[in-house]
Amino acid sequence: MRWFGPEDPVSLGDIRQAGCEGVVSALHQLPVGAVWSREAIALRKSQIEAGNDRYSPLHWVVVESLPVHEAIKQGKAERDELIANYIQSLRNLASEGIFTVCYNFMPVLDWSRTNVAYPLASGATTLRFDWKDFAVFDLFLLKRPEALHEYPDAVQEELRLRYDQMTPDAVAQLTSTVLLGLPGSKEAFDLDTFQSLLDPYREIDESRFRENLYYFIRQVAPEAQALGINWCIHPDDPPRSLLGLPRVVSTEADLAAILEACDVPANGITFCTGSLGVRAENDLPEMVRKFASRIHFIHLRATQREKDPLNFQEAEHLQGDVPMYEVVKALVLEEERRHSSAARNARIPMRPDHGFLLLDDLNKTTYPGYSAIGRLKGLAELRGLEMGIRKFLNR
Image (cartoon, rainbow, N blue to C red; front, side, top):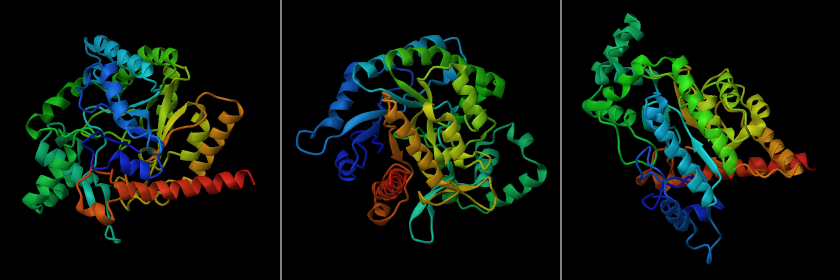
């Protein structure tokens, strides 16, 4: 399971009791672009492993994420210095025995939702994205200048009516939700300065942004390969452009191009079924089969597209639009192939992602999507599915 550090409401004891062996964590307290020192890494590692002499052992297995500085994404002059810092962090992680590192290349925003407590018929709550609510934020709260030219007049009239009917509390809630910072961070973006973060991308189209990503990969992937690190990019979430920003890790073709940008085994994928599953054209089981040897980390969660397919919500882990049985079967077959060939990375780390808020967690404050009980429910379902598949294949 993912653990955000000592202030995470979900404790390491909770994670241990869930039956987990590995922890997914990061040094969220450090500014983006700073070198992760061996001392800081060792401290986090010791925090995770404290109690291993008394209880079932836990180990820091995956870094999620080692974030990428905006200057690298924008291709600024200082990117080479920042890339050097990034590589030094990888070296320090390898020196401390951590060999799976997840990152993303989404500009400005990380994952985006418009409601982090959307009520379900069961009484639980989930995460939801409504493109019209997001457009209301874009047009009437952020007031991004280019937005006036990106939405048809009829759509703008509909959105204006929606905005006029929102209460002050609803406006405040939508604003704070869209402006959430990186997962694990207490910092949210400020509406007054948010536009300034978007401004540099006016000059960066999708083609240039792709080249900035490939440049980064070509500098870092060979170093990761030499270090024995499995370095894996996370897909865009949601997998389409927002606020006029380019997003280039959303489709099968995007992933193929990323792997081809530097064709070494270390340059791999964090296969997130929820992010990729939002787009109906993404055939997830086929993508697992196609990219199997380059999948270094797995996020298993399900998303459900709504009547308007641009809207979606987090679904039960075995429900929604993700064909979870076929996906897990393909992943199990890849693990068995790796075991049979004695591959070094035969076990692919997996975590359940974005659990519902339910039971006691409804009355607690947790990071959106990272409640204890909701993720435990998803983990139990996924474990049962995996066990059934393995027993069926080996009967």
